[in-house]
Structure formats: C-alpha cells, structure tokens
Image (cartoon, rainbow, N blue to C red; front, side, top):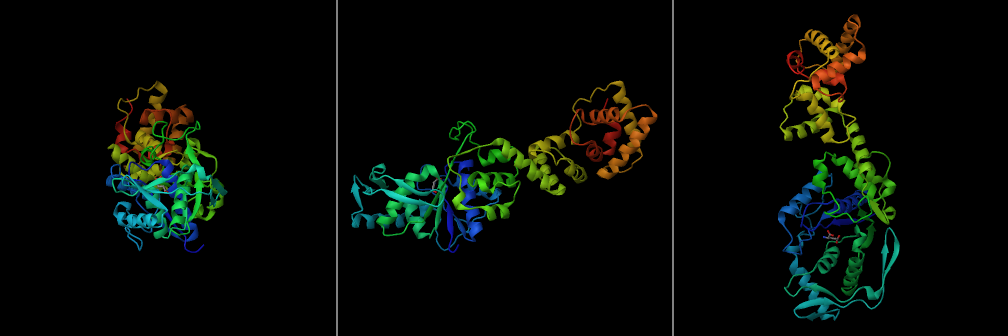
Length: 426
Ligand code: GLU
C-alpha cells in the first residue's frame, strides 16, 4: 500500500494507559505492515492539562513496548512541528478560511463550525459504512473564546497537512470522526480513511478507568511483564485474528489487517497476558533472561555474581513474570533470615550434601556440575539409607528455607561454596 502514514496522537495529561497503548500498537503494526510512516503527534491543545513530563513518559513507555516513531517532536521530519501547541497559527488561518466561506461563524469571541445538514457516512475500514445522523452533531467550537484552537480543528487540519492516510483509534471517537470529516469537507479536502477499534473494557465489562483498575503501562512493567508479551497482547486485542501463540513484532505486523480490527468490546484478560508473558520469557535465551532478572534484583538491592545468574537463568524459565522470576532467584541468592530448623532426616541430608559439595573447589558450579553433585549425593544417600526424596527435600529446605522453588540443580549451582558449606541451615 503506497503512502501509508498513520499517527499516534496522545494528550500528555498522564501516564500511558492500556487503551491508548492499544491504539498506538494498532497504528504501528499497520504502518510496519504497509512499509509506511508512524508519526508521533502530541495533542497538547489543552495547555492547562498538558505537561511536558507526561509527553516524555508516554514516549518512553511506547518505546519500551518496542514502538519506533519515524517522525515526531524529537525525531523531526518534513511535516513538523509535531506538537499541536506549536502549530496554533495554522489552525487560526484555517478557522478564518472557514469563517470567510461561511462554514463557520463567530459567537462571543469563539468560532463555531456549522453542523452538516446531511447525515455523514463514514467508510470505516473495519466496519464498513457507519452513518452518523445529521442531528447527532450540532454546531461546535473550533476556536475557543480564549483564542486557542480545539482538538477537533487541530486534528482535522493536522491530519490533512501531515498527509495522514489512515486514522486508527477507539470507537469512542466515532462522533469526533464525524466532526472531523465535516471540517475536512468544509475546507474542500478529502478526509483520511478511518478505522475504529473496540473499546477496551475491564474483565467485568465495565469501562477500564483508573477507578476500575486500568493499569498503566508503567504499572504492568512494574509487575514484571516483559515488553514482548504486552506488545503481543495489545496486538491481539486490537486485531484478534493475530492470536497465534507467542509472536514477535515482525510476525504480528505480517498478520495485522485493518478489516479484522476488534469489534464490540475487548476485555482485559489478565489470564491471557499471564500466559503470553510466561511463553515469551520461556523463549528468551537464559543469558537474556538472567540479565533482565538481574535488573529487577538490582532495583531491590539484591547483590549477585554473574556466575550465579548464569546458572539460574535456565532454571527460571517456567516463571510467569520477571517479578516471579526475581522472587525465585532471590530465594536462592539470599540466605533465609532465620536459619531453617530441620528435622533429623533433613539434617543428615544437609550434612551429606556438604560433604559432597566440599569435594568441588569451585565457588559456583555449572548446572551440569551440580548434576554430578546430585548423582554422588544419591549414591551416598543410598549407602546411608536415605531416599532420593528425603535428600532432595532436606537439601532444598536446608539451603533456601523453602519447600518449593527453582529446580535443585540450579540452586546447588548458584549458591556459593562457602555459603553452602557453612551457612544457611542450622
Ligand atoms: N488525544 C486524543 C486521544 O488521546 C487523540 C485522538 C485522535 O485523534 O486519535 O484520545
């Protein structure tokens, strides 16, 4: 498709929330698929609510997700400036044109567009024709009495001047779309193509909002979801035919199609996100997984040696989130605050383990070496009448103070020799 240009137009009034992120992802995948441009246009026409700090956060969150802007306030580009607050003269010029052609008129210092007399039929790329009845739209403000341009005017003008080919956004914008088409037509332009996605709602069908727990991207990142999983999840929400196991950007873009955008409602399904997260973490190579888990641990102030994380990387693969993985790693890296009290059998298991481990001089072991330790431990256990279960349970509780966790070979590999020989169990 030639000349595809789409835009993400966030208002910098707060963090990037899941609903806006979904819109951004849909636009980005569409641009990727078509080999077109993805533009960041900052919708800061409301000067009181727009904060530069939020613009930075939104951009960082979008980039963390893996989105890349081809044009924008920082990237520059041939259609700048990309902040609407810096484009006000352009909007006034067009408002004046509308007044001159009698499509708009002045009222108490404000300028209003005359509502269209006929129904507006918009050709939604996903839903087909959608008719907005003439009566649904009344005359509306395009320049406020304080002299600032409104969202409607700024958006219609910029979509045209920035040669935006497709506008993809939530269906809560349907009446805005009708207004913006009216504006474009009054200015003698052909409006871009429009496609609306289903609104994202909470599990219980209520609109996602701060109150009903609409998570921001930053919150989800804090909960340990990797960006690949969130990108994958949002892609599926915006275009359900994409769903096909864990997929990365290239494959998602390949499968994205405007005519299959979500309809009705998209429910925020935490279970699906958890599953995708687990699958994406599984697909990371152990070193990369270890690197990411190491970052979480650093934020918590938990110290680790690279050899420990290398040993653990593989053992953390079943974890659902990076936070779960960091919890599991922390349980190995940090000795229990209170040395675990052991029963007689477990005490014997720990004593045997120390004896065997003492024969290996290295401070840390590779998991395959830990396997050898386990083989020898079982042999010694057999001689002393301890079953494999008793041994493994005793050593795990002795070393970590817990009944469950990362497979024992990784625990044994990652715990420093001196720690295993002298510390931890009572
Ligand atoms: N700032 C508006 C929003 O975030 C832009 C909508 C649009 O025109 O795409 O909802």
